[in-house]
Length: 266
Image: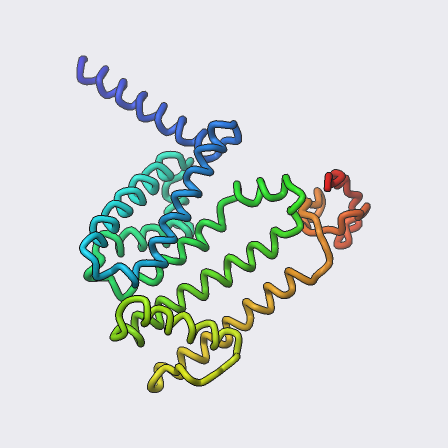
């Protein structure tokens, strides 16, 4: 009987913990918002470490920082699983799969070091958090949401490619010089400037350059479109769920349903 009561008490404690975490991760109370912003700050610091990894990989302190970040990421993943209404559904989401892979590279940095550049994709994962965009929409800068999303995608691509190029082509030039050379090549290729003073050798280098140019110029065009296109507001049409409308729209241009878009306080 005592064992059964103890199990019930433990289960009740776990349920309370899951409920509390659910409120913190998905709630909109002042405490929940502060908690979610704290998670975002930690995410940005982790991304900064990932970007700087090639510069400090050979230093003795690297492994200590690496394993410390692995512990933080493991705790955060566990907390998200406990807060989820369906852990299996959460595990199938691309952002969670990405975080699990990043955790693996942190736990085995020597074995998976060639895939370490993929850690920077956590910046893209960060951009999927709804709180960031909800807070932006509540300010006068709400019209810059698409620009910010496009800029994050482009920045993520630049640093992922830089990490790839450094890992597979410029590893012999250790430290800052090799990383800057990889970044220089990436920016010159993405912008199609093509100075030609830094090139990747062999067929693999040519294929890499082609992929970087095609994807990079597409992201640049997407950013340019977000900057110059007419101002829109995000408001879901009750009838067809179209999200983007003119600020003064009265009817949905897709289905004709009458809209009630709140006034903007600029």
